[in-house]
Image (cartoon, rainbow, N blue to C red; front, side, top):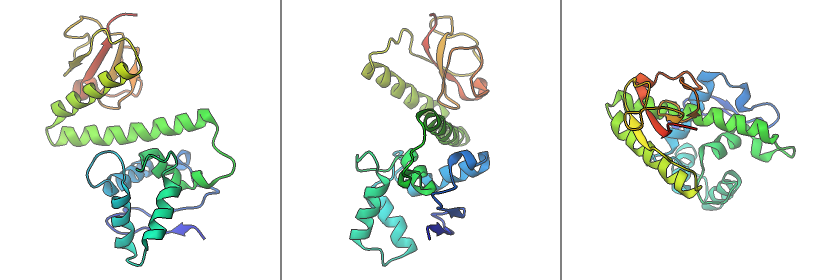
Length: 211
């Protein structure tokens, strides 16, 4: 029986780990938000991943009898890509039992699920930054990550300007073609955010002002 009721500060909701019938697609916005809240509660240092030590802290809080061997085995099952930490996609796949299924999710469905997870995680972080009056620092850090990504992938970054407020066009290049919304983290090629975020509240990062 893989059903577990998780009710402590580490587990703010009851999750049923039934590999046969629970997926992110089954979650409404509130349910997915609670999954992300759980992940953020486990991620003590806020680096965007759950380390082996953070997993150990959580599980031994729930059950002090968890052994190092059991913890190492669980870490191995959750950390699918073997990089030594648990990212948000691995975390959700573990809770839903997706990583234990013999028949894996189709590529398109997996991409849509990952996008939904990333949107929810990013929105929570941007809202938190906004509430703590740290939105400028958040936008700066995000823009730096976008620049690093473009460099690593050898993508053209013809502008690279952070725009706060409701500017319809970039303050540097005077246009807007491809841009990243700081509210959801998605790239848009239209005037409005693909997720209908209010850019006057979150700001945006200009990748390029022209095709």
